[in-house]
Image (cartoon, rainbow, N blue to C red; front, side, top):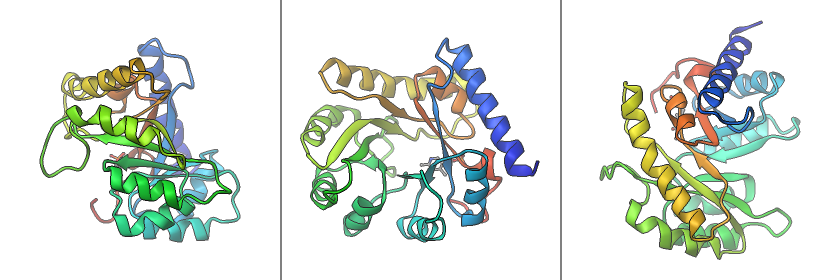
Length: 231
Ligand SMILES: *Cc1c(COP(=O)(O)O)cnc(C)c1O
């Protein structure tokens, strides 16, 4: 086994252990392998380990990898980085999921530009629960109205919420940052939205995220090792 095989085994074990600890069903958390700054070859190795869902931060980098890996079948591409309005068309044409929706204008463009032969684009609203002004994401108070507006768009399928809390070392601090996102998620369900996905948790805090109900974790470093550049 090479490093990537060992890393996948270790991360899957962490996820299973966290699912069990939270009393959740085994397999209820989907692993999204985050490939930013990693070569297409690393993603191909991940594919050989059975990985199908990949998260990318940068649209052009993702398109290059889609091109390089076009012979592999069953890949699922998740945009997890910020989305500018001049990139919506290529994203609507090439991705399966967008995690970082935070503006109605972008949502409308994606919906209009989603090709008719593809299923609706799966989208998550990015919640800025820590209210840091520098970070992207919708403030908690604005989430409900934006979620209902997006849910009405025919080219999109609203699946749930995503969040990237400020990094924290302590488990309890990490959980405290995820808890309000889960509460918002449950509130939207109570309002009648048919949503099923909570994208939260990275290498440092996946256990806390799973304890707070994450259904997708986005993992880079623990799978592929440190990135060459920081991002
Ligand atoms: C880079 C990144 C990840 C993965 O982070 P790691 O700490 O390397 O696991 C997850 N989500 C987003 C939005 C990222 O930018």
